[in-house]
Image (cartoon, each protein chain N blue to C red):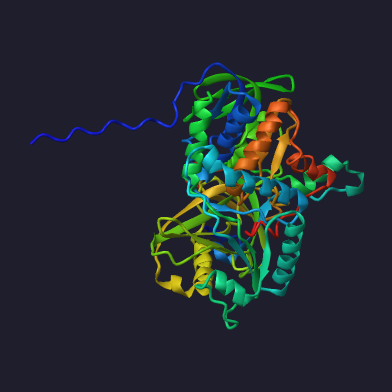
Length: 406
Length: 98
């Protein structure tokens, strides 16, 4: 018997070039934000002499580990503006990138379990509407209409007292988002270089002129950091500090089920958020582990608490099984808002501090960070998210809308 | 789950404790004299080391006392446990304090 010859390997989505000795722009971190930054540098600013250096493999950090939720129902004007910009970009990206990454606008419910939750939610709905973000306040019976498998009985430990609903919110297939961005960035000439760790920064006085890597020295006109949980480590190597703390954030999936869950449900008070992936897994996340950690894993009791909350909210989940759990490293700021802008080092820029909510912002992070790196000045959307707000006191406190315990 | 040895009660599960962040951060002696930058550094900036990190924990469901832990944030290994008034110990050789 003669074995069937294997089919031709399909075209690769990107080249795997060796790093060149010099680029106009080096982006550190090939996660969603780094790839989106490279994509918009090329597309919006015509800057294609760009390398994205990735310590591990492309989109193997938080981009592979998030729970894929996309929404823009944040409280403050500054946040609503940048997250809504992201949501509008999401709505156009599948066509623009010519890639169906299963963006599904199935809505997001943020549940209220206490009087304080109710007041915060009603206030946030009002703020959202004033900012042009679609939002509704739902009473418990309306919550059950949107998501019939939710237990809205008043007899539970933390009864559902209502919820905010953003119909345009939803989920997308995270890996495919990264691959689509990587593919288009590569097509426009961006070098995506995996297995390339930045070990130091080359400086001329206070100006960055390149990076040291495990694959040699790479000169750069400008350098942008998009390294999420490892931002502090890079900042230290570059000679400045960031007001972020890196924590484990865990998530998990069940085995595959028939479609039972029509939307996305998040509950800040009992610390769980749940959606059902297209394939059928129930996808759940929790709050961060309290301690600092770079180990991409957390403690099991966090998962136990998350499961307890999930089963009380969704009695139908009691027969589901946890199939896989994992952790990522999230960089959390004191005000639960990101830092996107200049640094104390000239020509070195930083995009970090997205904490537990970076995935939803991927296109806007890339859009604004590309603008910042290309022009040296923040875009109006990210100007409020400057590093100096921790000195001026102009914080953007999104602990309520961040929806995850920080 | 971490297994942490309270200096007074011995080894207990992590769920008995609460976390207090970086240790050895003294309150400024005269806050009114600080510049905005210095005050921001005290209020908002903490070390975020990858590797040995001195941090505070409180034994909430036990003796309710605070103490310090030297822990490796990359491996989560507890390297040393010591009292609040003690100096930060040097990181031990591989193998920790077992």
